[in-house]
Image 1 (cartoon, rainbow, N blue to C red):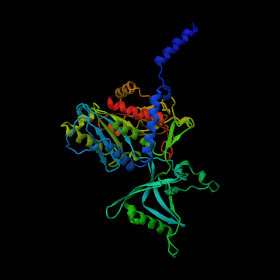
Image 2: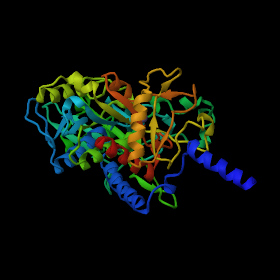
Image 3: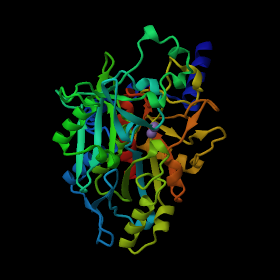
Image 4: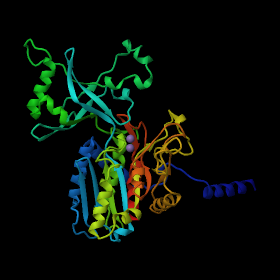
Length: 468
Ligand code: MN
Ligand code: MN
């Protein structure tokens, strides 16, 4: 009798309780293999795409390989046509025209390709006590102490006085030199260690060490700085003033690696948010004859609040959708009203070392699949778009029917902190929008961690969403 009761309760529990399980328990051996293969391709992309500019460049190459062509407003378009818009080399929109009327809306996948880093200031180079350094200004939300004493590479562009642009990429190739921000030795750090954590290393102490050898033996001041400028002049044809019109970004110089004895995870720089951008792009490249027009947007400036003409607070997305609507003789706002968007950004994964910031019934876990986040924001849901129950219901059905392993998660406990994504800016265009993405450990650190299975499930989520 007891046994019977127990199994009835068990049956009831199985049908009534919410289940969240390790993805490995739910997927086939074949899917596991596909996940490993996908991770490999992603790691290649990430190693070659450490800045928004490089991500756009590599995305354009992939799009063109797959038959995408630059969009020209007013062009004749039909189902199956593949187009893209390169927004100033820092953001990109790509689309595959669907078989349905455009007024049925588009399926929009959005992710960002900028990541926290150290930007060089506009007058960066100086010499102090026979060392040459660059002044930096950090970009995005970082814990400054994490950026000291690690190898950094330098990426970006310098626009010279004559208007010509030179590209810089030093520190990635075998044999390249690297750079670093120095930190104080523990022996002499008792005073430093008494500073509050957000000041252990201060913003103006994030100075990048770039040289130490004088130009020659002449009795002249600033010989080390001169030596650096001499090298840069020989290599790039630049003079010091050219830094004024440059964008140089220091990022971790090490490549991404498989992580763990079981190689189940990927550790590296820039997962936030290229771990969503790459699958969003891949899903668009792989989609075949979608019913709804599929649009993927990889945007810049998310980490600084999405302002600026390459960020999603600007109008480049609605302008594109309006131009697209014009090609079919319909109104852009009607297209947007009928559209649906997966705003893909990473979420915080539960970290057993720091459990206190999470409410464990409503947080994301590594390997439990793509995370669907109904709302983000801080305090009383400030700064969020909060997807409607109806749209969550739609997305839930699409994911379940597509056998996508997914979980729900909020960004930490109520009042523990918070943050936002581009979801609100897209929802503000009258588009149904929800956040989805990959759970991450050590988010915004120079070495972030994700799971391969979660990455693959995020790709699968985009695929089934585009096909819905
Ligand atoms: Mn992000
Ligand atoms: Mn971020």
